[in-house]
Length: 112
Image 1 (spheres, rainbow, N blue to C red):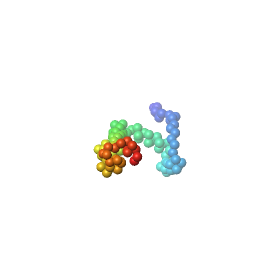
Image 2 (cartoon, one colour):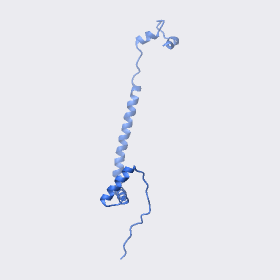
Image 3 (cartoon, one colour):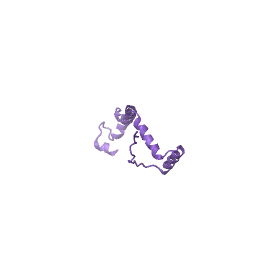
Image 4 (cartoon, rainbow, N blue to C red):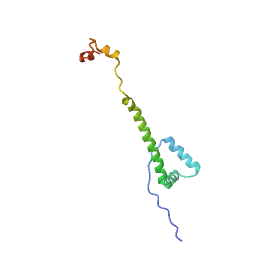
């Protein structure tokens, strides 16, 4: 009877963590009676076992939400520029029309 061996573990992954996170995770693994490597391998195995369509569906939902939020933000920023232009009031025109001839010359406009 031949016993099938599990594949040799020869690959490594390097991650960067804050020191406090690493020490807390190491302590938790020690309390649970497993190595840090076993915990990380378990996480990877569980993640790979999840169905891809469920993950893709969640990502698609977040993508739609992000696009809608961006659209609303752009709309809010552009809305003031789409409003009807305000016509200058008669009082403003009278103030600019220095000689009160009913015509605004460039010189009169430039003085203000």
